Image (cartoon, rainbow, N blue to C red; front, top):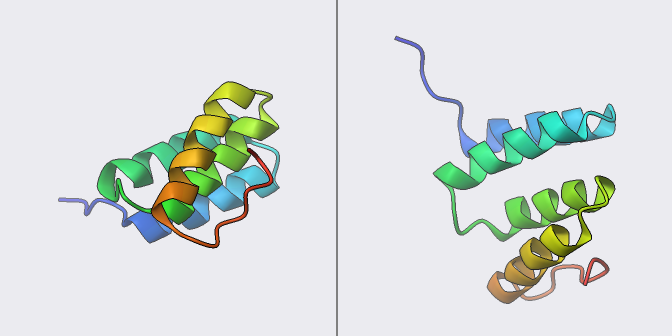
Length: 79
């Protein structure tokens, strides 16, 4: 049986997708990672950045605000 990827693996895969310009694949990876680690502010920030890159500003703002609320010192440039 195949083991489920870890949130960190999914985060790195999402970042690789985003760097390659595959924002929809990046979004999928970040959402999968958040399903496994729902309180991870860094993943929320990654998802917010990816959604912003898709020009989904309202969705991006929601995740950015949630990330900032969870972790002090997170960048707020998406707000």
